[in-house]
Amino acid sequence: MSTTTESNSYFSGDVDPAMYEQYRSISSLAVTALLIGFVSLVALLAFPLILISLIGIAMGIWAAISVRKNRATQTGFPLAVTGIILSTLTLFAGTGRYIYEEYFDLPPGYEVVAFGLLQKQPGQTLPVPDSALELNGKQVLLRGYVYPHSQKKNLTRFVMVPDFDTCCFGGQPALTDMVEVRLAEPLKVDFSFNRRKIGGTLRVHTDLKKVEDLTGVFYELEADYVD
Image 1: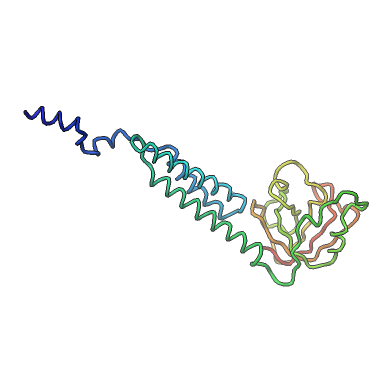
Image 2 (image 1 turned 90 degrees about the vertical axis):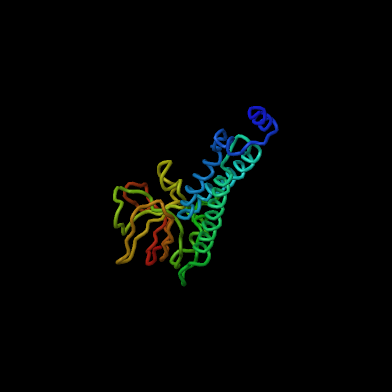
């Protein structure tokens, strides 16, 4: 009699759901989304890394949908949601920090100048564009990266370039992509992959000025501000 009752209970589906839990596996997509969520914290350090946050959000949504569709065999929905939340937070926090530093956290008295104004333009006769010549002797603020030299610490003189790729890959940058920076005392910087804001008086030359380890530069910045 007992055997019959248990058998009927089994086939009627009246079985404790916990019995099936051991057969459900954790979704690898959900775990990956969570890991990317934690990795996306680096986006707070450098804006280009915000791409990791976007990947984390996409992966988390994919994982959540997958777990929902396969709930009989997979678990991990909370992991996917946590990954989405982390990536979303770093996306907004990293973007907010970038906007603040680029447009609000600026020292007074400097003209913010994009490197594009210094770069060579098609059809020009001089080695530097007119837009650069107009900045000669002005107090400007440039954003860029320290070009790597043999010395890495306590730099008072170095070359600044506009982007990370120019900084570290592909050999010597274009001549109009380089600005020699000379820091006023007691300012010093260390080489790093962080983007910097450097302000000072810009000097524009139409003849190359020799720089150690490089062909030369057309631009010098007598800097009195570093961030």
